[in-house]
Image (cartoon, rainbow, N blue to C red):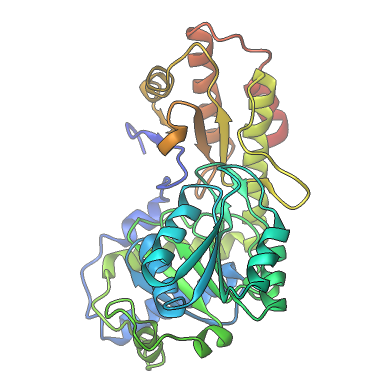
Length: 376
């Protein structure tokens, strides 16, 4: 990746050369056995990394397409409780407003949910719960297991956005009671943007809406996937499927648990660096909420602008993320997703530390050294 910027974002992320090369092959007939093999591999490995034996389909569309498919197919006309502590939880809420009646639970971005409020909404008749497992806008990992248990106890459907956790953290959709789990290609899987995946439980199929969208009709995806060889109902983004299959084979070779452990170690290294510098981590955690293992959100110190800070880091060849919406200029975020490891983490932290010192920001300690000790 000579002369290319190092993307240390919460997606898109650097792609392995194998993945990039996979997109360069000639097109094939998407109704052929050759494409069916590609699609079958994608579904097989995605089920493993999602921790599910349920039906699973790949959609030619970004993660938001799968979010809308989930709500449009299973939440239309229903009472939905939406858990919102970041931008993407809010996106699920906004989608829910298009199709059902939403009760939001909004503690604030990066703040923990009160599970008693979730339980109260379910007792009041909510039929569907939506939640983002790993909220990258705030760097917080939300309690999927606990929310799934509440949903099961009240007979409600649990829709979980796992776009930035599947492939980078431990996800056990079936054990957690997740009925619909969503994944994205350009995050922890280290594939190109443009594809998403959605798994569907038997309970979810029983709640399938009659009035469904056309392109995102999951019944059409189920019928096509059941063919031999499996197909998609409409023309897929074939080169992206080639790349996704290669990325998933890399995930399989590494192993789901070792891959999750690598992501956790990288995030711990970034958090250790932030603490060594004397900077504050943004989210508030408790015994069921945790810091994200795929992105770290850090409060931007006083005395430096977002443009000056991230621009300086970018000048050193590294791209990191700022805050979104009302958090612009208040936080910065370092992604630890996909095909990166110690060299990329340490290079990123060295660039961040250099820019902080250059702008006269008081730095308490050596963040790079602190991170290196974690990476060892």
